Length: 210
Image (cartoon, rainbow, N blue to C red; front, side):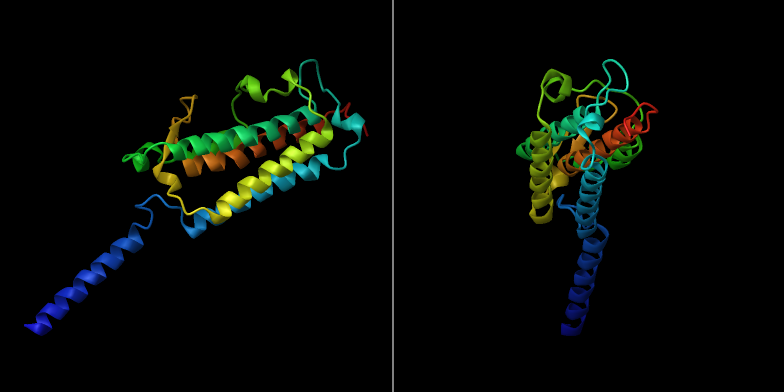
């Protein structure tokens, strides 16, 4: 009898461990691999921006490829402003109650961020608070804000133990729909990469100052 009970207990324990391995994200917390992915893309996007803009002359910084088109400086300002806005969106997601349908609602959205947003497909009007044409920040202010927002985001994703994926917030654009807080975090570097392509495009203009 004792031997049978021991076998049943071992079998039950094995089943529980197997389920834990196959369903590691049931609580909505990010895995070590997901954390590493977020850190890498955040750093890569930020470093790519810096590689484009740090050594530009003021003439290059302010070059406008066409009327009403953004300069490199204005694009960098937009990135800096959007970083803060998107981090706030992630915080708003975390402030909502856990969504019991988070897995179904947010399934496949990381691919959408990669294939649509980061790839710079489609066009969208930037919200007024992050339109650089609506305000004028100095170059040192922009550079400081880029660093401040990056450092804040990096510290958060390196240390958080919150169930990011279990909290959701709807995006105003239907193409994105419901995003979980982890995806809202990934939105930050994906948006950054999108506009890095815009900076590269400006710099490739034949009239760009040498």
